[in-house]
Length: 279
Picture 1 (cartoon, helix red, strand yellow):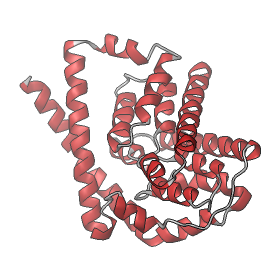
Picture 2: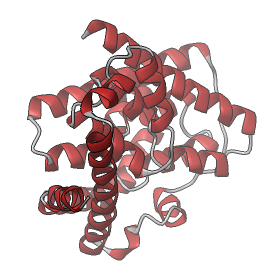
Picture 3: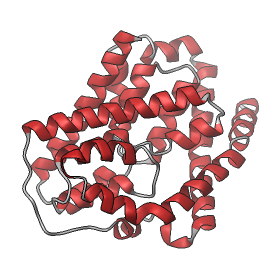
């Protein structure tokens, strides 16, 4: 047990400098471009899913949450909302960077999420029409509601995010090492890795959890070899960060919210199954 704890702590601490630098850059970009990003996606029109797909892939404080507010006010279409949800990276990108993964892998995952999000968004807008509204939720309001610490400044916010994610990584690494020790790598891999349909179905359900721990767990399991690429993509596609929480709060049509939740999950799982069959 002591060996497992020591191994988990050391593995997690090694990531701290890279996580901090990554979040520092992300916070700087967010504070410089957050409001402009919101206006851009709001004025995207019929190209909303494409622009939303690209912007959603850039980790920002509560961008998926801001998109939920924009949709509740009918500033953006349903297709644009889902494109942003599907392409949202959450904590995947910082972890891949801190784990020193090849740029080819990082860009492949990001481009796949953008392409799937944009394609799904265009199809949804093609078959489903939206009504225009007047209310508009600004990104800084959503951030304040979701306690993203955006108001603390770049340095403090980067430190806060780094500590939070390091804690989640430590817990997940410890749990994974514990399972590997007592259950074995083969048993864990067979749960998801060797199940082309069940794997994406389970990972997609995990991705729906509105917490950064979900994307941390999915990314770590994939990097450890315990999760296939298809299952990983299913989980990351269905993971919309705090977006779903805000959607259920600001959009009063609960049936519509459940429909959006179902669409997000179905698209993520279907894409994951297709990737499983192709790769």
